[in-house]
Image 1 (cartoon, helix red, strand yellow):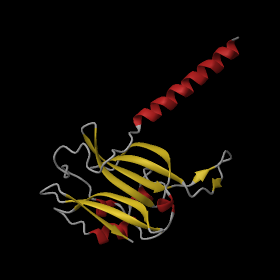
Image 2 (cartoon, one colour; image 1 turned 180 degrees about the vertical axis):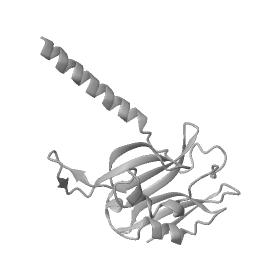
Image 3 (tube, helix red, strand yellow; image 1 turned 120 degrees about the vertical axis):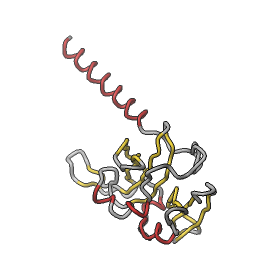
Image 4 (cartoon, one colour; image 1 turned 90 degrees about the vertical axis):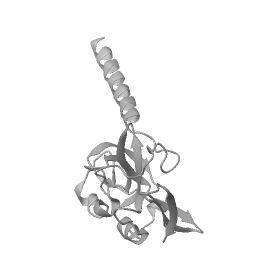
Length: 181
């Protein structure tokens, strides 16, 4: 009887922690810039071209190469959503080959500290190698104090993977979209 109670309690705790984990990692907004409080330039923001190259080796927010990022305003806080390719491990702790396995992390826009992180399935465009996120960010023309990258997404057009980059004019908050190979 005690064993059944223990197993039942353990299952209930596991289910509760799984639900709590699900609730703490927010879904991305449907549209770039959704919920922005009238501006795309929060105070003390870390610009993508300042961190995108070094972050994969320095933060648990990134599992491997960065395949996407987006500036979001969540619960009155500015955050970066980072998507990255990640290495999956099997039940024995060995690396398992799965190119669709990725990581979706939310980090503070100022400190880049991890707010939440979750496993995710990468799209075909995100799985394919190509121009690195850093190179694409450089080509997009991000420049302080204006022309801030607010989204970088890997997409497929005409059977080719490329970057769709959305920038924001920090003076007018107008968005411009460009695609780069």
